Image 1 (cartoon, rainbow, N blue to C red):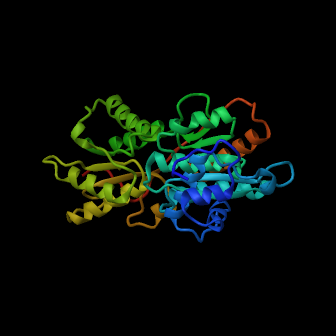
Image 2 (cartoon, one colour; image 1 turned 45 degrees about the vertical axis):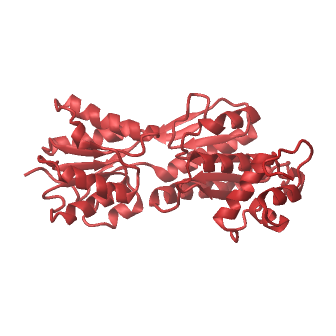
Image 3 (cartoon, rainbow, N blue to C red; image 1 turned 30 degrees about the vertical axis):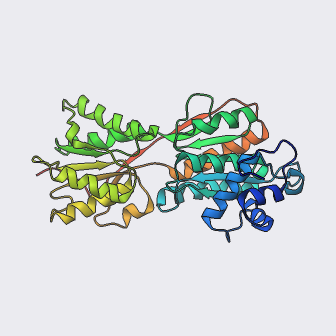
Length: 343
């Protein structure tokens, strides 16, 4: 049978195995989220299920009430405390509700990989989906809406009011951190953005710019560098900022992980924190108190965001017709030792 053929009749696990060029036992392990499957094989099987329109046999998989009692969670990676704190809040709620979690990581596979995972999870493997910082999810959210499949976005605004979403006051957080640095006497404040395809990144940048304008400071584009929420990019962006003829006396990174990269760059140039350069992050992940000096940062209630999103999803599963909810939890500036008044 040619690859890519779409079946018009009932698709079986044997058909998926043939399409993915694996054994039917391997397909079964993928569908049951067995960890003993390589990422490459898992992705090939999931792509095959999507091409063939395969749906998991709900009768065989469901528990009482016709449900799987499983929630799907799609995240970019597990390498930071940011995701760990969100997952902690999710897990607490799922344990109380006696639900299990099926976790998929996209790493840097882009929207194509994310779309494959979401489509597969929505074909009977789970009762609902939690999507953390999804990458341009519009490509598959319409499919979920058409199927009336429950989902909630975390730290992402979605494409409109029709999606349930939980986030934080990112613009206010960006404003508060910048205002604090200005009050310390800093006038040259570097800013490293997150991935600009995400609303939270744009909101933090907007807050930074608004604080500068409100305090009579001009926006210098040379002080704004585009990051990606990863530590190496924080290091690279900070190197560029510190190489300016009139270097900044403070750098505000859009998340703590990039702020750790900024710290490395400052030390690499034999400068001192905070005597020569003050540094601020965003998120308040657990590692922010483990670095030296401890990091001043904007605290997001990450565990609470995960818990609230899970509560909303469970409500949607029980009542799919209820209107979308959009929740924005407050941020808070946490002052520690990485900032000081300018000399």
